[in-house]
Length: 179
Image (cartoon, rainbow, N blue to C red):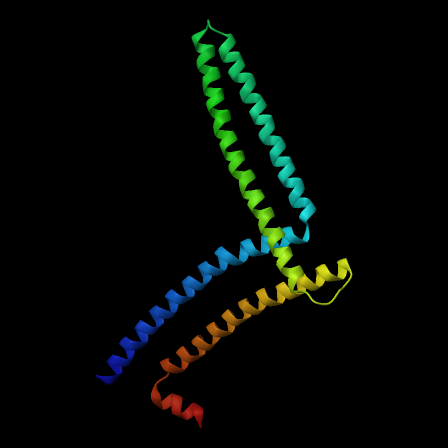
């Protein structure tokens, strides 16, 4: 009866560990990948600013197309089929405009995050180092932290796997392997 209780307990333990592992994987994917993109943007702030400018230009182009289509709609009072086609075109352009504005907001938020991150990193760095060396130093520090966190997760998983394997061995085999 005791072995049945141990098997039931270890089954629950395994389920709990699998749930924790799934949660850990989801958190790493949701937070580490965007962090790495932000770090990449922080290393190339000019590229991020160029992307924001390019997105603003695309938004202005869509706005211009929408204004032209609306003007054509207001000028052409005769053909209903052409009016309906222009109306659908304006609706599609409005949809594209909304998507571009959302994309622009995302880029601007990312730019603000990069600026804040750079201010925090600059505020905490004490020694004065030339700019090129300083950026590599910051990247090395951040990479060490990210890879250290991932390494900790891996070693924790290996510990659980090792513990689980020793729990699965029969008591006689476990006692003989320890001696």
